[in-house]
Structure formats: C-alpha cells, structure tokens
Figure (cartoon, rainbow, N blue to C red):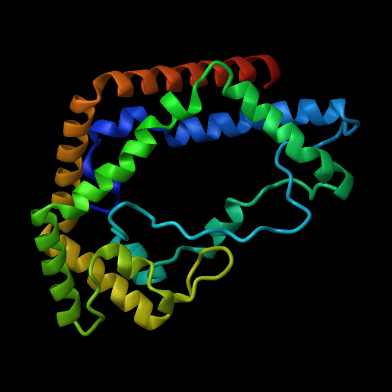
Length: 250
C-alpha cells in the first residue's frame, strides 16, 4: 500500500471536491478572470499568472494517514521531489502591478459566478464542516488510539522519537520545512519516515484508521441525510456551472 487510494473509497468522498473538480474549476475561474481583466483594460492577461511576489506555501499533510509510500520515504523523508514544487507553480508571466490592482475584484467576480445559486454556508460547506466533527470522533476511537500507541512504540523501538500519532511525525518542526512546504530530506528525517511507514505496514495502522473513518462517516451521513443530500445537489450544480463556463470560454 503506497497511497490512501489503495485503501479504497470512503462514504463521504462523494460529497467532496475531487482532484478533477479542482482542476476543472481552476481553469473555469482562470477563464472568467481573464475575461473580466480584459474588460478592465488588460487584454493580454495570462491564464496562469504569477503574483508580483511569490506567496509562502502552507504545509499540508500528504494523506490523512501521514506518509505511506516506502520508496518515497527512503528518498524524500516527509518531503517530496523538489521538481514537484516547480511543477505546481504558475506557468505564465508575473502580473504587473496595474493588473494586480484589478485582479482581486475579477477573482471575486469569478467566484461569485461559479457559486451562483448555491447557499455556501448551508449546503456547499456542510460536508466540510461535518468532517471536523467526524475527525474528532475518529481520534477518540479507542481502537485507533490503541493502534497509534502500537505504531508509536514501534517507531520508538527503532531509535526515533515517540510521536503520539503519524501526523505528528509528518509535521515535526525538526524537518525544517521551507517556504514551499518541502523539507531538508536529512538522513534522520528519511530514516524516521522509513520507520514510520514500516511500522504502519507491520501493524496495519492505516487500514484500521481508514475503517474507523468509514464507520464514523457512515453514521454521520445516516444521521444527517437531508443535509448531505442538499450538499451533493449544490456540488452538482457547481460542476454544471463549471462545465458551462468551459464550454463557452474554454
């Protein structure tokens, strides 16, 4: 098992944005922004512009379960191939200061267009807000806490820190992440990541974690069926709007 997708889908997955949704909506938004910028006197505004100065990238955990790929852990520890960081950067030129003045307004207009007819607070964000409570319930589960304890002891027995859970290992400040979120890939970091993944595999930590998540999500969906259904309807409306923009402007 090298990724969370190997564990199979979760009950709440259908109520959330997919990577394909993200890519499609990003392009639709870029097309709408370019159209708006042209109306504001910037006819050659790029689809994938860089900001006048590069923003700091926030660190996010690779999966819900921390690092899972043993080969990646051996080579990159809790970080990743630096080439991946450049692949995710905007491909086009930096926007000018004049363009930057008009960009926020056009970006907001694009978001309003894509969200038209959707109640963001009531429907759009419902599954995400429930995910916070579900995560709390998952972390309280006695089976998972016992699994984390077993994993933690396994990692410590190999000579590394006694982390309370795999996310704590992933986000350890000792890895000294840079502004792009990547780590230094030190020998200690890489060896810790290898021990982390090895212990997860030995004790089936991610599999149990996934099972607990699935159970808690199923219980929550059953208890709030109407609200989840409304959220799914909003997501489908958003997808239809994105498809319409791509068909007309793309």
